[in-house]
Figure (cartoon, rainbow, N blue to C red):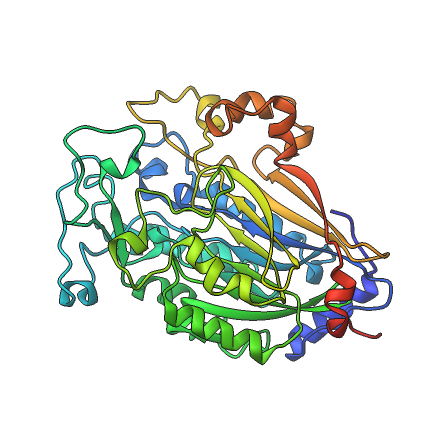
Length: 431
């Protein structure tokens, strides 16, 4: 990422500190959005030296957040907005939340998952504090969003109506049992609307369900943008709230971040292991979120998601006939860092993440704006396109059907924002 005019940065910092929304200066056509995929394996309390792990994996998370902080517009860099795609931490603190108990939900024994996701106070004493420490590095310096993933809920259990089958069917991952999350008190305590991260911030313009859904405004590249963060498998109440936010800010180019939206084949399908709509009909699955909300609002042009382990992209026309770009980014299964220290894997692979982040570099100049999507590891200090071993490390597990060239192209590519200037002419800022 290259720097832009120091004067523009100084103006942006002054505006942030004074509580005003910064206005991009003339000629400032470039900016970057930092995308933080699932960080749960860094923060997992079992992945630290205190539990006998070969290194403190949460150091990689702090390295990621420090790198982002060092490259914010307010620090002289290019990053104008930061979005975390959920599953910030790993574990839960309850067997089941009180709301789901009252509604009659029951748990089923699950030998595979029960031990690993045993409720623990170390969620509050190890994982959540480290999450807070990391996001404190950017707090007050940049508009940002965090959405809850299924691991960020207070509880996650195997639903009694969807227990594990007697034998695993490799064509049906739900044969391992279907998990369901509930309760957001833990998430709200760190990322809720009333926390110091967001309360009274002028760019944090709205929230719902205590901050499980939220909206932010940021200005970059000569435009004013709206960002909406949606909770996991967002229910109808969340979608209705989000629709009202779009109406409140008409015509602004809008980005939606949510946790579960697209699989590694680029399909809008839930992960069969944790399909919220299948267990509880108040939830919407990814295709329902598209049909009910995203496709119905022409100002939504970009959707970002994590949850399913790899990367994918697709573009579809919305109800108005305009393109909506949709990107999956999730690197939590990557574990070359463990291979590097000769870690002895057991029956199941251990995911870490290896420091990989997504950076979306917008260039709004000229007749045709574009976004260069890059994948960068703070641990290896390398772009995916510059690391000779990249495909050898990850392709076979993530995208075995793709050629090396296809695989590399999935982590370093350019999106041409066709018709963006015409579509959003009313949101342009005149210097």
